[in-house]
Length: 196
View 1: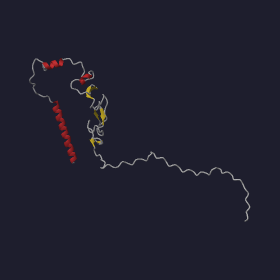
View 2: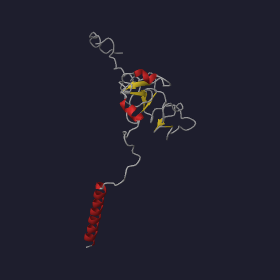
View 3: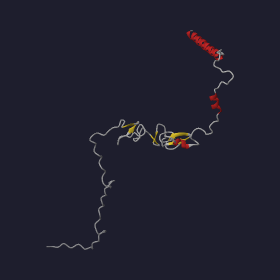
View 4: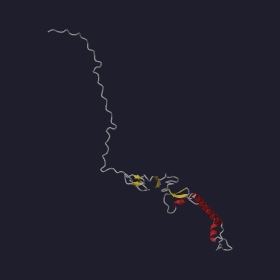
């Protein structure tokens, strides 16, 4: 029952707001305009002059005039890329040359794309160098880096010389007696036993 009552209240409020918007939108204001000059146009002479001037035939931008990017106090890396003056030393969409785009999360540092999350020469931002031997992680020098204990551990043992080691030589086979085959001995009849 209460849901039905709440629904009826919501519908009636919606219809009342809709009717209010329609009436206010169609009402004609009955305000008298003031400060209107009679016998002249409603615009000023200055505005007429500006509106009647011919448009500049040159198109805006640097597409037809690339030298305007290097005029005045401009930096040396200013180039005209896609009809805009951009600094190719720091623009991620035109890094080094027009149209060379750096990957997502990389930055353009001196005209080269660099991953500032892991690059030790541009750690976190362009030009931020980490000390020698310190790594760059998440754009911070030495973040969660484990340092070796002091004093430093011994170096690992050196491999045997020569490397790789040669296998041991096999034992030689026993040689037969010389001369091979042995010479036959001449046959002698056995001697009779001697008596003494």
